[in-house]
Image (cartoon, rainbow, N blue to C red; front, side, top):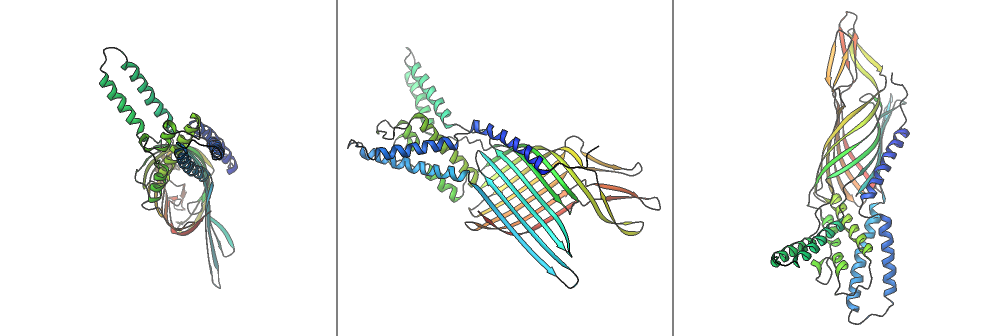
Length: 460
């Protein structure tokens, strides 16, 4: 027998927090570079630069050293700003109020929401809450409320250093084999040249195709008779990001891939820092520092693509544990009289699957269109059966939540949004009643709710 006492959202939050922390430590073990690692390198290089500026240079290398330091400083400053913004807590809030009064009655409505997020890549933490309430003729009623906490992370994080080391190892093997008598030297040299060219090519792997997530959620919906619904779950998101970027994404990418003033190693500043023997490396960067710079730049470029890609197609699949308490309130013709049927069902708990195809389209930096279609269904028994021994109703048990929105950025911190949401329950709770003449009456809960509107929100 299921207890009538549903667990608090605090309990769900604790479970989600444990899952989130576990995923966070997994992500940290695979991340290119931590914030602390880069911060230490950044401060170290700034200190080196300040010392070197007071030292005497050989006149033949002064210009090259100065150029190297200036261009390296520009790169590091951009990366430092990125790291600060990447993990800054961002927020968005919205509020709407309306009131109506007559001599016989009144109706006041409040619609408010707030969302906060931290990070983009390789992990992202999101929190959002929405509330819709009304006060009608002195009676307070909460129509819809949502609280959602989620943690997303990319388990596959490319390491640019491994790719470089793999090619360097292959080149060393080929050069060793070249010294053996009787080998075709020209063929080996062609292979060496091929791998050297591959080292100059930018890495294409980014790991954005796979994302894991965990979440805790609580919501209520008076329209559908859902008093309380708690869920804790997780799963996988498979995504395809377009290579086409918005104008801001292109600008960010080009600035991060800036070319040095000297043409060495394909005009790549980081590659030149790693191998510029013709230039006196006044900064004396260690192999470890160079590796951290390279990894941080790779992280920046991947994050930039995730944030400013024009198209994203995704498919989510996961499972969640659900606890729900519902009430049926329907006006029906019972015994030939319009009667309000009200019945509170015992709380239920179950495991359900969830899938979600999704589309995000961002043609310009100021416009974003999102379409997500969530569908969840039971873990094993796909039919919901209601019977009293005489009348039996069988329905395919699935729940659908379609969310779509189009946001327009007016100013840096103000947005106008148009949204539409449709929630559909194909197997709502139901009752079978017996009328005075002995006939049976099937009473179904509300199956569908549509909501739409225009919102004005602000970022902070």
